[in-house]
Length: 93
Image (cartoon, rainbow, N blue to C red):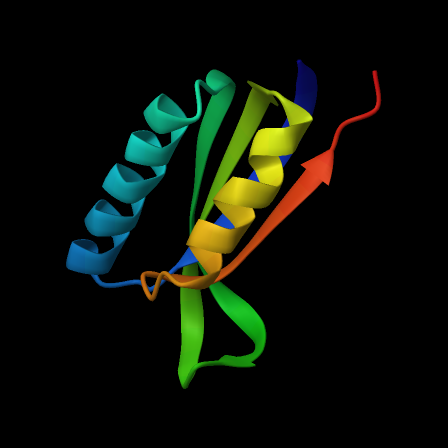
């Protein structure tokens, strides 16, 4: 298992934020992801407009997950509309 960081930017309304977090938790259970750290970074002004939004709710995860599962989660996240953006980064040990 490798360590990854996941940063998600959700829409700022409470419904999309809650729905997005539930979706991520369901995927984590489905792909046997171990969450090491979870941080709510709050609402911030975006550097540029994304999908006609100027603000986003940032959320950070530190994960342990098999590397082959990252590509499967990435494919699923691309289809999801509750995220403005997300990024998986492999963490150096």
